[in-house]
Length: 140
Image (cartoon, rainbow, N blue to C red; front, side, top):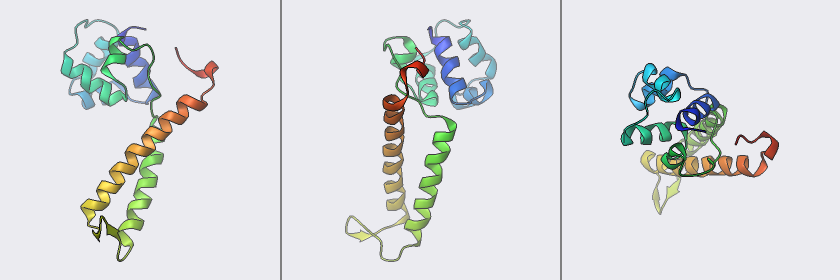
């Protein structure tokens, strides 16, 4: 698969439109279409980085330096994680006497806890997808 095909495949897996990916990267949808169709051969480094971040992969995978991509999160996965984090945020903010690192937990401390939880949940979801997705369903 070439870089354009990888961008197209990851974009559609995440449920993003050309316009949505373009907005995330700072380009128009026609530019994204040209990338996917191989009409722009030399993407700038900063754009490759932004595209890889938006699609939940690495620049090395897009460039073909890594053979396989790690599992990516779908929009549903992201919504599920956000829902759990919102519920946890409400519970943490409503508790009296909540301590963080020996001090009363400030809203900033709670956001720090939630950010760490989000990273852990995303990593766990990706790892589970890699481990439990049958090989016959994996895309090569």
